Amino acid sequence: MAGVPRVRLSGGLEITRILNGMWQVSGAHGHIDPHRAADAMLQYCEAGLTSFDLADIYGPAEDIYGAFIKKLKAEQGAEAIGKVQGLTKWVPRPGPMTRKVVEENIDRSLRRMGVDRLDSVQFHWWDYSDKRYLDALGHMADLQAEGKIGELALTNFDTVRLEEIVNKGIPISSNQVQYSLIDRRPGQKMAEFCTAHGIQLLTYGTLGGGLLTEKYLGAKEPTSRRDLPTASLGKYKNMVDTWGGWNLLQDLLKVLKSIADEHGVSVANVATKYILDQPAVGGVIVGCRLGVPGAEHIQDNLRSFTFDLTQQDLDGILTVVSRGRNLMAAIGDCGDEYRESTSQSWRCRIS
Image (cartoon, helix red, strand yellow):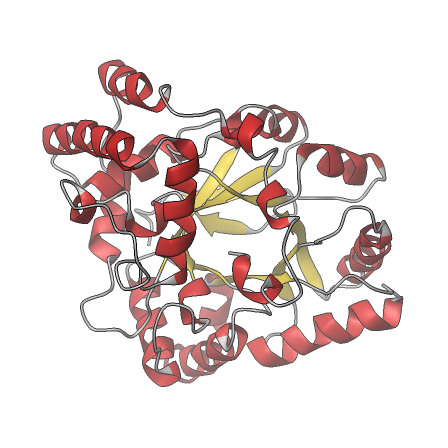
């Protein structure tokens, strides 16, 4: 475990710089056996990857985490629980945010996860015109002071709203946003504010759902649901199309492959390392298909910490990515792509 770099959030929680993402257990990426998933979480911890990113809306994710905690305690003792970190999310439908509503939802996550305190609660809000997100965060700050919440964090908030929340005196430790070689929006505005206020960025989509791997180098462009069988692949293929298209992605993959070969690592390692090195980035979330034979990438993930990108590497990468569209102009700031969610799809689009 000592070999995996960690970062300390402002409230004192230490997390690994690669976090294990649990969106993949939500049902949108194929069948997951909950018992095998809990067993697989032990393997990640044994390798030193002890931090898990989950959410109340990721299907059985919190329940699987709870089963994992129970198993960990039975096999290694109560002290082992303090060596793992579960960063969950609360993603409510906009509506009244009374103390009762907020506490009931926090208590539900506590029960599901089998813990006395939530290590981190990453809050998401769909509609900025409804200012009751400030009420919710105010009550969450009270619950933090009372010991039910460790770190108070955000998911997919833009810079304007993040600044508004901080100016209200609400202590935010991290904001989870999409950040990759394709989507570099956080570096344009968000990172500077976060650096100035001690807020860490936890990033998802860094591997584009798998599109930023050797598997898609030289591959025919996927265009059908059959070609893009998971929610991640469909989502990030749309992002690629908005950014610059399949041919530009191929140019990027060629450069990444050349760099990867030079360092004896994978394309995914290079894409991950690039984001880990960006200002304000505390950690990168890499999705896990827990308990699926052959789907774990523990050793490959760890190789992201074994090398440094040279200036020549960075120049080669930037030569390609700079040819893509400015997604800040095309989409808006971090998380703006979620502001258009409909009532039918809102529960499956956040990651």
